[in-house]
Image (cartoon, rainbow, N blue to C red; front, side, top):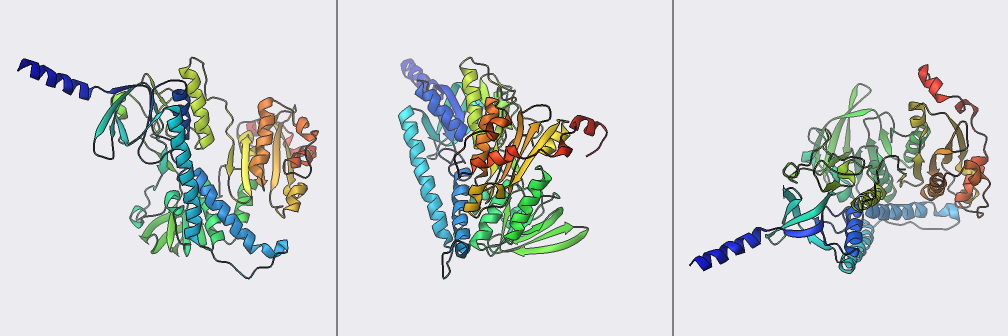
Length: 492
């Protein structure tokens, strides 16, 4: 009898003992995925816990799917402009189910590739919902109703963010679209009401307008993309209005009624007066909230910031020993390429190399058509921080390749230090802006003076060649003054 009891106790103990891993990752985003493949490829035992998406949001519901849809919208715009290129047409129709299926095919291919990489590297992908039950120890609820317990020598949290609905009366009840549902539409919305004039709202507004939807954008700020320079904000507003998008700025939403996909009404207050917007669908794109609820973080000693993000230091260490956080949930800039760089930071630190996030470049691109891309300082930032600069700026018409494409909307501009040749920042609003920006960013990384780009032998005719007329232009004299002095006297 004692033998049976001892055997039973040993089995129970064995059952409750967590599986041991060198690294356990909660959340399967891009940074997490690369982390898993890298450490597993180096012989470490690694597990990734992800509740829904193989590879996280980027290849499934965010970056890549949205750019897929946006490209389909660009093709639609070319059909509308066909006479401009000397091509006759009799008309065309938009099949949104076909647009969606093209996107789904790409996502499926990405999923297969990710799973194959998991197989090759030996990292374990666990589909389930994880939460901490003790320091560096997680319980995973699996789809079949069973659970697993995992403990890592090190643990990384990378659970990302989600669309924030805010406290607008009636919005949640209206069952609004977020970017996730918008990318799954199988019909063109008759009238899409977009809440938010940030990059998600603007990208999808232009795309849906090009598919044939009537679109209205509501933003609480006085300008679209309000943190950008005034010329950028104005260029984006002009772009959308020229394409027929209705824009309401400095507008406060009072309440929402109806159901998205059927009929929805939004009451807004603008210039002291109320007006009612009626549409078929509503898309909310007014910010993000961190996914930190229900993770049992308090049981692991992981603290949050006052905004609800995981508190980390410059090495991405949390307040719990052996626990790290990367990506958006750690408050990092909300871009996949920053998540990848977060991986580099943690990878180095786990291998004994001190690596911090401070001072890194954060390039970004808004994938409108044309694109907006920026790296380094904007004019607003330079003025706010009292940094003197020279401004170089040319219209896209100065880029001869843009003329061959009939894509001359926009401009290139660069900030160069006032008393030297170092490039402080670069902004491009035009065709191929992201690729042009990358060339400047590489020069900035290398510490090259702007004259190196001005005097470079670049292939003609290319878009990057536009950097030659840009850096050959005469810097605006009014920007040569010392911004520190200007700021000190309270002048703009």
